[in-house]
Amino acid sequence: MYGIKSEYYITPNISGSEFLENEVQKYCEYKPKSEREKYADVWMDPFTALNVKTMKLNAQAFGGRICTAAVNEWLRDKRNNLKLFFIKYQINNGHLIVVSKNEYYLEEIEYTIMNQGKGLLMAKMKGSKLALRPKVSREFWLNEFEMKYNKFAISQIDRFKLHINKWCNNVGVVNNGSLENFI
Image (cartoon, rainbow, N blue to C red):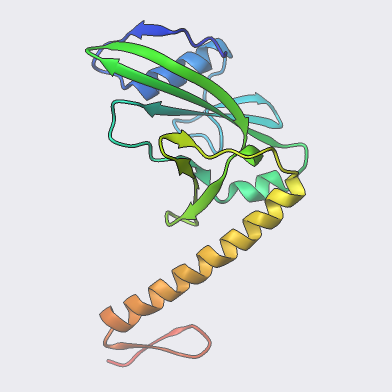
């Protein structure tokens, strides 16, 4: 799948995840336009983004990062699709062994929204495995996203209100949400 072999020997100056992402890009004959492209490590065509996700088994934990919550805007166009290519591997002294390779559409992955920027989609895990579900429709996914994002945004607003009350003794909040300096 995407040219990923079962094992490699890599030099210590590159991480396993970076190496595997580069291998997929090489296989797809894809040259990134910037170091971190929005939504994708590889654009398969103008409407299909492939995001390479790696799980290093000898690391303490898989972070589960999928992508920015802003992907919902791009996915409102029904032609657009985000695929995630998960590669589980282990590495010892430069010997990288690929344990598994799986590809899923975003709509097949259970997720939550975490605090980073405008929000970060994080894959849910069941033990050390990705929490999956049968692929849901785009309409269902967008409705679910809106409910999850609303809950996330409200919790962030509440959290910041607590910080304002604790840390901003000389600033008050006016009813319309603007700040007023009392100094």
